[in-house]
Amino acid sequence: MLTTTHENAAPEAAVVLAEINGQGQGGVRATGTRRLNETDTNKRMLWVEHVVAIRDRQDQAAFAAVFAHFAPRIKSFLMRSGASPEMAEECVQDVMATLWRKAAQFDPARASVSTWIFTIARNRRIDLLRKERRPEPEDLPWGPEAEPDQADAVALQQETEKLGAALAELPEKQRTLIEKAYFGELSHSEIAAQTGLPLGTIKSRIRLALDRLRHAMK
Amino acid sequence: MDMAKIKHHLNDALLMGYSSGTLPEAFNLVVATHISMCDDCRAALAEFDAVGGEVLEAANDVAVGADSYAATLAKIAQKPTAAPVPAKPADPVLPVPLRDYVKGGVDAIKWRRVGGGVRQMVLETSSSASVRLLHIPAGTAVPDHGHRGLELTLVLQGAFADEEDRFGVGDLEIANEDLNHTPVAEPGMDCICLAATDAPLKFNGLLPRLFQRFVGI
Image (cartoon, rainbow over all chains, first blue to last red):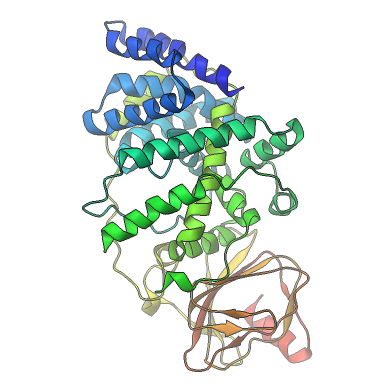
């Protein structure tokens, strides 16, 4: 399932770019073509590079590629969570605009791009559907030496990839249950009763990144 | 605050509920406050968020409108960068998510007496569950009570002990129908807790039931 969705990414990006820009975007097209031949982890690193390009250079081509891949998934996620198509459409635009505005806060040693986008979409869903505040944990601001290490970022992306593969390989019933939980279809007690998440692979990696952060702040 | 001393943590159901955005606001506030104090749970939450990211990644595509991308660029043009959030002054007791609800630090808490020397401030959240700050004088007991639903108690200052264990700063007690307990604040320092529940507590005894009428829990 994951393989199929990944393969869709590059053509979608090219189509959107052609529609939006109508002019020479050879560089990004080449990137898209190259992506098809790479491993899934490298694709994840490519999304990271795109977000970094948005952060550092306000790179619209990179943004178009991220939009083409994630916007249809966010819309699907929101509609499964109970949003009408119109509300989901509006919400997708808000989420993607937030990604652009907050690109500087993205930390690839602590999250993959899909993880980060999920948290933005979830928060927007709570705003719109439940009209509630969402209390967020106190942020850990970057210290002066806290620029994430490239090796840490690659390792985290690899582990996230493994997590995705493990989820895809779960028995259908179990995977459906987890999807329902994240689409907001399970209550707390229903969640409490379910088990079997393939967790434990990336927690230590994230913990390492947090320790580095705490250390840099001292 | 010595983070290494936190012994009682969030469980998977609470982490997943917070990550998926399905918990009542009152519980979200307790979870966000505990995570502000506990790097282990912060890392565990990131892991649950990663599961959400993979669910999103694997979601079927639903085509966005033809003008969706242009509309997004227009939104960005209106407001290109997020307004910087001004750093809040540090507080010795209340982590940031709580300061937002108290609208200030520990000195801004509007305590109200509720009997037995205990004071509280109810925080405003959506109605599906309630959350309050409790101030329990050192050495004082909160009346013996059971629970109809789920009760989360997070220690912010001092410590309390009950039939289960001792709970110090950052520790979270998760109590359900099975637990009847009498929390007692340790001598030496008044105890400040954040307590959330999705159902009224059951007090065992007449005086405590009167207490309940005043506290409203």
